[in-house]
Image (tube, rainbow, N blue to C red):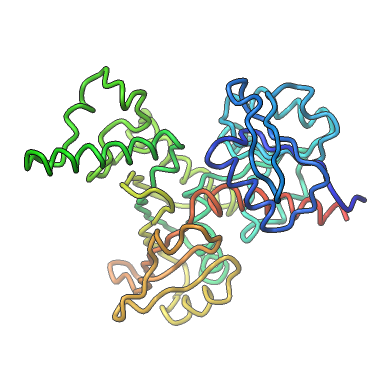
Length: 355
């Protein structure tokens, strides 16, 4: 049993990696020594952690010698290459990529929803997709009482979900569009961005202009004409809830917001669930904050959700198109609860079990 732990953050210079450092410090995770790992391009950079300046090291197999907990957020390729090596060298890995989420032997965990899944880990735990986490934190308590049999969800996903380059794309396009509007009274379209060699914006992170626009594509399209992100929400939800035949339909949309996703969710339940009972369950649920007074302008907003860990829930109302239907609107910080905080919470549960 240990009181303090050696922790590695893989992908430490990325949007989620830097948030992981912030969350580790804010939640007072018992860090004995921190090791910041990234690609060779970031070698030697210094990042702040817990009041000190830490040097970034190049990710190598030997980076995990002496490490107890490794938090990965460097993409599926790096996870496939280095996570098994980290486990082999004695670390417990919490992986934020899609590399291991659907592997039957790897637990896929949202601490407020299925912490019991950690009992069967063999050194590797997967962090779900951000949109899946933000949806399931409020849906799990409703499912436990009324039994959800169908979910329809439309997401409104911020650009930070596609990384720092996407955030830069939104900022740059917005500036260019506003300059064009001021100078010429033209449409809010960034003409220069349409040219393949627009050096000021290439390489673009999103497939279309995002400034003053929405893009009904998050990740690549699959053979069934859904996107990879949409199928992540379907398959991960079934695995986490242990409901392999749960009916789910997802449409994922990128919107011109920097941080925090929002989702419109329709559920159909096996048993009756009134709006009042649902609100009562959600008020008691860990990780949920009910913001539901629409007449007075109180409902979840990405601006309010950004920077905190609770998933905000509101616009609760009956869906009379089905026998037992309910509609809700949620918003959560995709970098925190959708990624970094969920990973740190998993690590907290792991060390609690160790003690």
